[in-house]
Image (tube, rainbow, N blue to C red; front, side, top):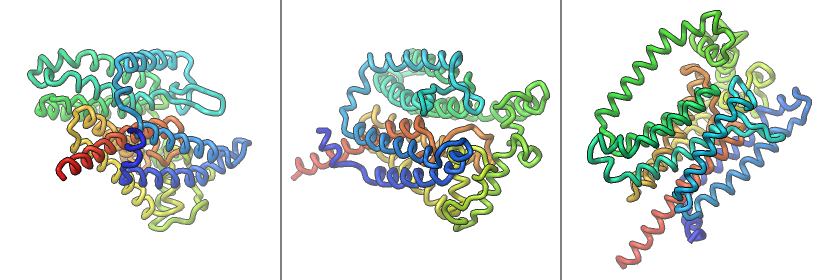
Length: 393
């Protein structure tokens, strides 16, 4: 049956994914070669790691596309993962490796693993399972909804709080968005959902304007890495030599690139001006070297994957499978929005990578788990459709 699912692979998703992965390999090499030399290593160091990550990613996608999804729903498996993530995230607060102000990394030789990335995939399959098993009771009344969802809500809040404590505001926000969408797809009153959304947005704006911005500008909090990102967001050119350096040089890179770019490998901003050119700001380097047209092409490919994922979810007759698709689409959409928002200076820098393009094993592997499950669901739909045609004939 697994071979049959691979024969019915959804190439509308798989081909754009492969194209973006290849572009990612090329851009990681272009953006990181100079960093490798500056660190006293090889200009190929990041390229080799990225190539390994992509190869593992393709294998994971195909394995997940072919596997029997019942293994993802086993209670012991889900409970064990939940316990593992809680223990690991607590442990990271004590002994985690600090990178870019967040103690959220496990150092394993030449590779750093970020558990918060894998929590995204876990939340999607866990909450989809919990909500599906709670049907139809959760749709009968608000009281029934709270009764069925109280423990998933509690443990979701624990996971997000532990990620935020690192602090990893970008990771926490993406996990929160995934959970919010899935809970609202469970049968929760849409009027209440809109009220919560508007209330949260209003509270976030007020907190940002009247609490976080004053705190960030205060001398008492000048050492806070996260708050200094807010300072850079509010006035990047006023802090161009300090916290605003990334945003300002991102502007320069995009401006230099124009429509057609300055040529692959010819970026100026990656040569010491723009920090993190191979991760958070790789789209700035891509735009500088290959131009805005290629940047829009990359965004278009990702949009195809996201819209196709939503379409698969809408077409599914299984609430569990639909919820997984909506969760994956939310994950990719919000991550792209946060990354491009930071690159363009319309959002504070959150430290999230661009899907399939940025350097980073944890992000690529997590996305591959998600994409593989979506392809699995799509293959099941195609097989069922073919079987129905045979019956009708």
